Image 1: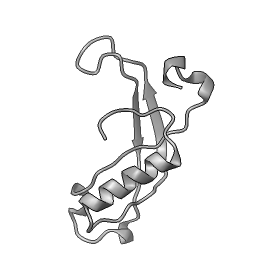
Image 2: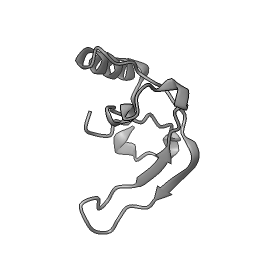
Image 3: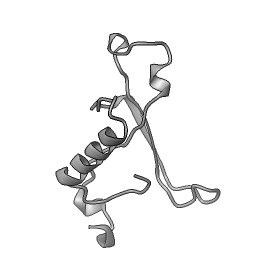
Length: 93
């Protein structure tokens, strides 16, 4: 997945999970809430990320849940966000 999808439903999320697990059949999906501060930034006026909002967050995984020192270097991630419908541009609803 390489783009933002507005209006994602449970079937789309399920398809994504199925595709990831098919490609990485030795993996397990993890659903973890963000921890600590979530920072949001207005779109940049210049540079390669011009015109994109930025959201920075941390996810904390319990130490006893992971085996191996560098296990978290071998992962993929996708973010599911909830946004109020009245804050989404009409052409994306």
